[in-house]
Length: 501
Image (cartoon, rainbow, N blue to C red; front, side, top):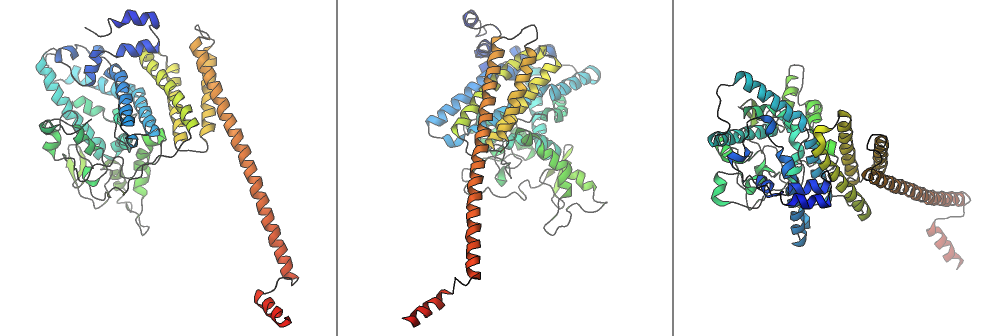
């Protein structure tokens, strides 16, 4: 029986059925907890039509955030604060939200293409309610996951879609949420084709946390290894398996870390670089790495071959792409000691961002519930709000000078949006007024901060100008004294005094 049945009467007495509290507690069921850990059976997860497939990401999202909070609490109490950071965690969670916002793109493409091929070109039909079909699909889909996951690492353009997932220098629950916004659109073809410690003998068959730590490492031996999803057998079969080395534990992140929390930069800049800049690179002598008209085809290879490929690097074909024979070629050892990118941020700004991050989560959870009923205008406005809020967070975390100005613009945009909503059939509800009040206060805080900083800068400039003026005056006096002969060589003055004595 669903665990929410007993809770619903109690919840209805406290929350309205559309309140966030009601919606979140509805998801904290034993069934959803089992789904989060794949403790499911063929009979409860097999349905006859695509339209009846639930959104499992939404179903388990509340449990996932509960795990994330519990993990941070345990790490904090046990003295392992070095294993997470506020800026990194918020950036990862924001990436997860953004990836869900764009699921209508890639997943819709995959589903429509899958249904079209099934309806017109299927070779055989298996019974949807047979456990053997379920088991066969489990292995088939996991093998497709291996191919797709390997493709996003070894096929340059796809790596540009996936790179943000590996950009975190930490390895915790929030890292799993740092997903690419449009990766699914690039991997639709593979959908059509269909964390803790070593788990001992299970690691021969299943992808364990130890195996996945290697996948996220930037040590040379970790590069392009352990692509498996549920099973690790595919990596063992195709030579991409690597065990974790206790004497060389994985250091997380990219070969060259991004050094930014800018969400859009993390999502898209590698694609831009592969498409437009890699083919224009030059060597130490200033000679083009991809020279001449005859070699311009290599600039296409730069975007489609493995991201670490350059002319002269050995590759070999695998499936429909090329893979490097030695993935660790040219990969440097991680620096020692490892210094993570973590610019300091004052506690008032940390508190400010925390409040708005909680609000962002609340609005996103409502968005996921109400998404099917939203108009395109409302949907687009919500996406714009998410992106702009994430960009504002990133600018504060990177300590950009324009961060408060961007935040003021964001707050004003929210106010304009809600002022327009005040004239609809719902009118100025309490929740709308509270959000407007929060953003008015936030805008005032940021404006005040900018004014204070401007005044402080002007005062510093005045002091600096005064010091410069004093320095110039002293120089002018010194020059004047020299020209008047009042300043003599000290040695001559001493000799003159000695003669007079």
